[in-house]
Length: 311
Ligand SMILES: *[C@@H]1O[C@H](CO)[C@@H](O)[C@H](O)[C@H]1NC(C)=O
Ligand SMILES: *[C@@H]1O[C@H](CO)[C@@H](O)[C@H](O)[C@H]1NC(C)=O
Ligand SMILES: *[C@@H]1O[C@H](CO)[C@@H](O)[C@H](O)[C@H]1NC(C)=O
Image 1: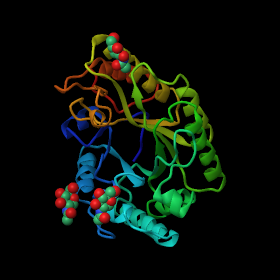
Image 2: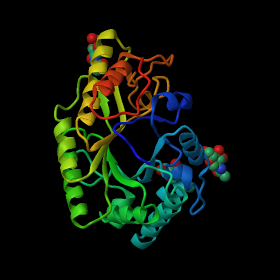
Image 3: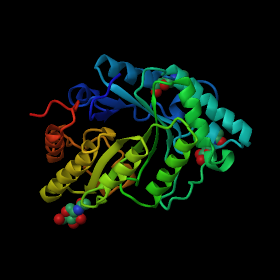
């Protein structure tokens, strides 16, 4: 599978948008632990298989999401009392079963998701607290052994600009690469707020690229206070353009994924009740100013893009 330039991704909902507008898909919930291993060592690939098959039928790449995260774990795992050896074997088994099931079918895997707090300290999770920070290299090494074709990512939020959290990722990357751990890509989620973008997104992308990693914007949405107004919709369009330009201006940035597609299907109102309207299409599935800004930015970019249906 060859990826040329930049790819926008549809997540999970409204699959019909997907083949027309997007060159890559991330299964939103279907590959998470609660969905794939709801009972210890009993795997359910039904939902993820559906998405992967659908993507391949439509010529789309798939970003796998995810192996090791602290959230959306099944109760048996979350509530268990584990010693280090047992939890490590549970993690390895999950990656081996999942990774080999999807071997060769995915462009990339988010192997580790959200390992740090915003201040750059380790997040307290079962993985970190019981196994120790080496859960990261174990996860990457295991994933690479079972699917040597997939690009292996570590993915996080609030790491768009240079800050304490992205510094922690940068130092982790340096240390993993020095030890020849198979680590290929830094995933910048991109859950952003209108008119509050960090100014140094290009510099941040450049420093990870400088380590030899690829970079992807993996979960982009740019939310605003509701109700929306025309002024903020224009600011949002500019912000989308800024993020797209930050990616297409660096050859190491291989993809831009939006976290869902139209404003009626979004995780945001559930978590930020006064905010929303963060996506490219409105609740009627009509393209917003943000959509045209993304299309124009991709069209103007020197790199080849899979986003090819602007008016
Ligand atoms: C497997 O996952 C699918 C899709 O989410 C779900 O509909 C089905 O009930 C699951 N099967 C089992 C045995 O849990
Ligand atoms: C597991 O813990 C959650 C709270 O985190 C609780 O709601 C649930 O009932 C527990 N399940 C079991 C099987 O103990
Ligand atoms: C949007 O517009 C209103 C009114 O102009 C403003 O109060 C609000 O804070 C703006 N910003 C965002 C991010 O929604």
